[in-house]
Length: 488
Image (tube, rainbow, N blue to C red; front, top):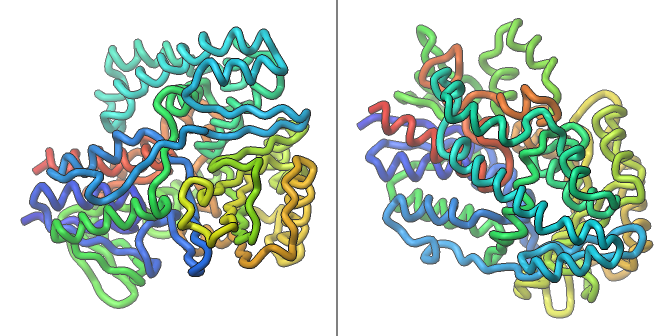
């Protein structure tokens, strides 16, 4: 029986582990944190439950396939439900758009501020769908580290159809003119830690994913997906070690043969890293040349999270909510050029108790508040003083949108900075998605899933192909598992 060690138990690592175990491999998962999930963790105070990490769940079929491919039914492990309201978008001019699968309703809300943009919306959605189907056929179903795969005639032909040299903002400008619409759809660049003014047009496909396939919630919170995968892994015989940090990758004759942890040494035939591939290069195996190249890569954005258990409900809020600033471009100038937190950031709030009442005590709200932030640099220090200033600005900004969070009603508060993300998950420079997609090379030639120098070493997760987001990292685990299965 061939042995595989999976380092890190995020969604990519877990999906890889269960597939390999089902196909007869002896799989051991090693996780630094006390619980599985990687960046997706849970906070449960008794009266309030929060998910740390991904909140928006799309492409349900990806998760369903993980279980069905192991001869299991998703619904026996995880309870998904459709969020019909989609995402509520608040704009500084007072307009609101609930972006969901009701095309005519979305169109009518856009028409309230731009009849021209409303007329263009169905055409835009159709173009986004074409992007998605090309990506699904050519990028989501195969690893692309091999030269033969990257330069296949069919891939190149379809690659040209997705406007690889056109920015997301420029692509959107070919349909829309109003800043509200441009911001609402430009935000999809942040789903991969990037700027809409630099990231390529392909990420417009997310309008199809959310506007046609729909958004889902998970009963008991997004972390219930981790619990479902953990249950499946244990059923399939996966050995799981938590509170176990990998101190060194063991390399012999150019091959990964095992890992040395803080309390034991483990050997295997294949090593799969769910730790950020950039961190692995920096911390374990990078040569001076590798580290020099690493410094030239632009990391993705990070985030500042504020968890608020509030003894109050907010009529204006839905499950997913986004509050856009007056000038959207200023946010990305601050993050990627000045390496600082925007003075007027876009604010995302997940109010999951609106859909799942058990996530907060009766009459209360569990607010997961997120703003985009720069990756860790010397330009910005995450101190008590700076975080306090950010919180005050965010609460003041929300108040201007009519969301008045009375401090006397706040019963629970917790913060998470990019520094916390780096310390907990070993994310490269505290990023959420490894490197940004702000240029052609980084968008389409991410860190390969198989290490170029070290044999038997693979990567899964948001820093590698096919990219960031819960479905994509889950796909990365499945694709790497298939590669190892085919090898033997």
